Amino acid sequence: MTDVVVLGGGIIGLTAAMRLRRRGAGVTLWSPAGPLDTVSAVAAAVWYPTRTDFDPRVLRWAGATYEHFRREARDGVPGVLMRQTRNLERDDSTGEPWWAAAAGKVAYRAATAPWTREVRFEAPLVEMDVYLPWLRDRFERTGGRVVERGAQRLEEALAEAPVVVNATGLAAGALCGDPAVHPVRGQIVLVANPGITVSVRDQGEPGTYVHPRTRDVVLGGTYDADEWSTTPDPATREAIIARCVALVPELAGAPVLGEKAGLRPARHGGPRVEAERRPEGTVVHAYGHGGAGMTLSWGCADEVAGLAGA
Ligand SMILES: Cc1cc2nc3c(=O)[nH]c(=O)nc-3n(C[C@H](O)[C@H](O)[C@H](O)COP(=O)(O)OP(=O)(O)OC[C@H]3O[C@@H](n4cnc5c(N)ncnc54)[C@H](O)[C@@H]3O)c2cc1C
Picture: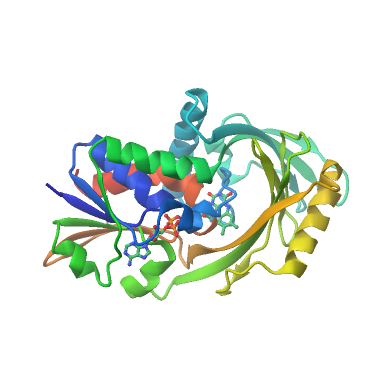
């Protein structure tokens, strides 16, 4: 029996589906694309609330997600790692960043120009090409059903179950007529790992980041609002490599293994996570996570399961 239809098989839909199953709901997940054909599979995907404004809910989701991934890394869940991280700031901030309360132990030290301060902490990093298929498989093993289809209208899914979770990412803009939803294009380059293990993030404009995984290193980034192209741009690739080599010189000459561009599902006003009562049933919206979908995923999923009444 299907109690809840979850629309979307990215990180937000899959984590919500898992939480709903854990509460005993009968869950069917609809997705027109496999886990590796989602924006979630393009993500770096490092715990950090990139360009996300403070909001008590966001802080709660970020903290719960941090703890969830920390436990999964400890338990050896495929694709989940913990990485020492160096955030290099360029502004004159002196206090704790708002997200620090969610990030375990955070240390501060002075930095040399052009940086003003270095913030060090340990962060979860998820190899999405491994983790998303693992999560989907686990969902199915717990009795969840996956159907390869999209919904043209929310009513289609409401005809199948009294509760629908709308975790369709960027597609939510058209699906529920939300003009605040917009794409923020990001491009990354994957290079062979020369043996580095520490993540480095330079908070200049545009931000530059180096995230070592087990087999490769993710280099970024770009942040282009309202750009719809998902074709990687060669000049941007070269600029990303140059910025990352300047930041971490050990990367010089590392063979390029691949590149990707994806559209972050951003939303003016922040993520929409709320229940909407309709005559046909309840829609729990869970979209608009921008550049922080992995960072907020498990915490947000708890809230979605609560709103679904499961
Ligand atoms: C270059 C880049 C780097 C990033 N790095 C990070 C990072 O380091 N950390 C971080 O936290 N975040 C990062 N992000 C952001 C992160 O990728 C997103 O926030 C996250 O993937 C959003 O997840 P989602 O499940 O909402 O969307 P998606 O992954 O886009 O999933 C949406 C799902 O909905 C399905 N769907 C679409 N339309 C329909 C429909 N009509 N009916 C049913 N299903 C539908 C799709 O097929 C898909 O399965 C990055 C993004 C990019 C592009």
